[in-house]
Amino acid sequence: MSKILIIEDEVAIRRVLTKIISEENDSYYVEEAGDGLLGIEMIKNNDYDLVLCDIKMPKMDGVEVLEKAKKIKPEIPIVMISGHGDLDTAVNTMRLGAFDYISKPPDLNRLLNTVRNALDKKVLVVENKRLKKKVSKSYRMVGESAAITGIKDIIDKVANTDARVLITGPNGTGKELVAHWLHEKSARVKAPMIEVNCAAIPSELIESELFGHVKGSFTGANKDRAGKFEAANGGTIFLDEIGDMSLPAQAKVLRVLQESSISRVGSDKDIKVNVRIVAATNKNLKEEISAGRFREDLYHRLAVILIKVPSLNDRREDVPLLVDFFASKISEEQGTPKKIFSEAAIKLLQEYDWTGNIRELRNVVERLIILGEKEVSANDIKLFASK
Image 1: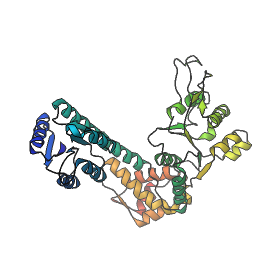
Image 2: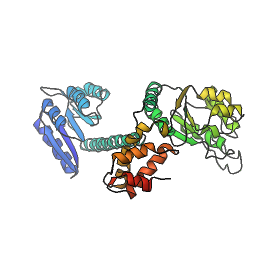
Image 3: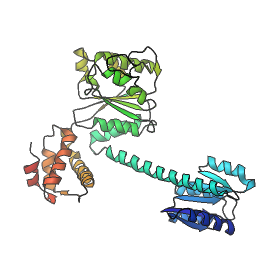
Image 4: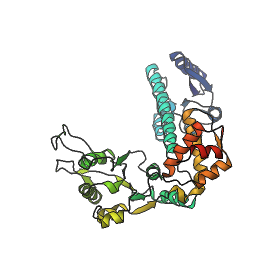
């Protein structure tokens, strides 16, 4: 049911609006306030999906109601109701965040269309917030060790810049997590973050994948196709396992960094792109440079900011926090009560040799939740966590 508040000092207009809206849809529940002060109190104490507010009222006018309401509940769409002489003021309220305005006397179709559109917007705003929280929770960085605190500090300093970042560290340590945090905390967060696993794409297809191609440029190129760089325009491209990228593709990436443009395979036309590059690798790129497998000039272009993600064995003090986080997350996903890990169990997990790092720990926690007792014990660790 959609809950709607009408703030209007003229009783006759208030009642007409209530009647029209209530009769339009059984799921619309309407409450009334006779002045702005009462309206603000009702907004503070209730969750409304829509507010319709008159502009000219005693005690507190509609513009002040709008400003206060947006501070209290910024997600509520507010439709202003204006008299003929209030149109300039009504237009100004749009700049202050009003969803729309309706002239008196209200046109029936205009009123109902505005109500429907405003309620649809509220649903989208709430859903977007829910999804954003879900994404943020999915990529949460868990840990209070000096290494993780240092990484968080670097992210806070560089996220809102366009500085290129190279993330290094063993497999399973959370390099992708760092990349997502960089994007989510940046000014580019509303634009896409496009991920490319350079190790998973055959060397003969990597250029097409990154830069796109034109029809007929190679066998199987049946139509023009945009690449990942174009898809990431305005946002971030995450080049995971960049140490596995072919030398020809490296040369083209270098050109993007130098000229901020790409050309599709089979085309000589330049396409401007505005993309922030974040790269990651589990390889020692300086050794790869010495072996002739990685371009030194590309390395220096990418490694403006270096973030080294430690292995789990180098941050054992974070194991209890990670176990608790994964236990909560897995129990939520499975719809089961959260299991508690005994102190002895946690101690054993801290002593474990985590060659697979965070990824391995998550798998072990899931296994223990499924196979262990109500309280996961040291004995459960010995039975089910062994390699």
